[in-house]
Length: 329
Image (cartoon, rainbow, N blue to C red):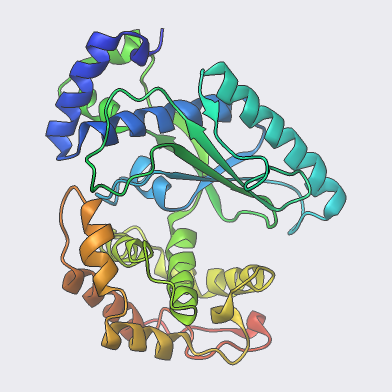
């Protein structure tokens, strides 16, 4: 039996966990269903990899920001999937995700005209409805569904095995209510995760790309995430130079990755982002709303300034990134 099938106990632990972690009940409920979906997917999808911001909360426990999107990919041989293997992998993934949605009595909400899911694509979005008990406040910006984004274009790296948890399980563990964890199989589960170093660097480059397009709405969360990762002490700075060159090569193959083009000056652009405070308005509205422990914009941006000063981004992107060296201080 899953926990949500016992509505009385489910409601009690949701509200207790929400109180413990300074969250809204609808956030804790959604976090539970995100974990339930992830757990069922990793049981059936070979080589599934969980990546992105939500992994920072559910696996590394380094952010106090409610993150609701699920970014997934798969591990495969080689650096990039060509059209034939891409279609086979994507077709299998689409089938397994839709079967899992049906198994859990969730609903696929995609409109076939506006948001079709296709096996020929590198990227797909799945908007998934679940049985909501709690409704968010009218002015809250949380999506009313679970969003899965799958990207199969490029090989994920580096990956490591981590435990995936959720707010309810964390609360039950803290209060030593182990019998509920056992009875409803709420134990953290193992999953392949794209490393925190990769997420850190991806977010640094993404912030530059968003600035190029003046795309700031709901993007300031990356400033907060970068700060929290930086302050966590989990970054392996000795590995950043070689990893940076690999990431630049990979990102170059994607779209709107201006920050990885030859001649681009990441440190200079990042300093402009800091000096002009381009993300502050969104941070003080959208990002602030999702933080269970508030971190001021000035605090987050100070970490970004330290990162720039330390030289953890190249001064200029060379044509041949294999020779790239960042001057770590």
